[in-house]
Length: 108
Image (cartoon, rainbow, N blue to C red; front, side, top):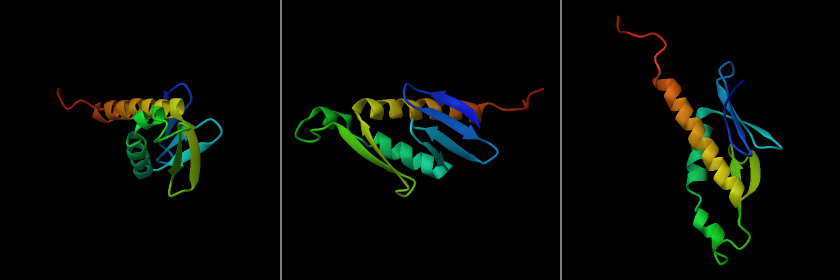
C-alpha cells in the first residue's frame, strides 16, 4: 500500500496489488474500488458547505456520510468535510498526474 496524499485528518492510499484504494479516516480504514471512490467524490462535492453556517438549514453543522452502499457510516463536522474535500482533490490531482506520465517515452 502506497500513501498518495495526506490532509490534516485523513490519508489516502493506493494498493496496486489489490487494485483498490484506502482512506484512513482516523478511527477506520475504508477500502474503495475506483467506482466507489468516484461515488465518494461526487457525494462529498455535492455537500453544500454554506448550509453549515445557516442555523435553519443545518443547526448542528454535521453531515452524515454513508460509503460503499451503506457499509460505512460517518458523522463529520464542517472542518472534517472541508478536509475530506481537500484530500480527494489532492489525491485525484496526483492520480491524474501519474496517469498522464508515460513510463517509456515513444520519442527517440
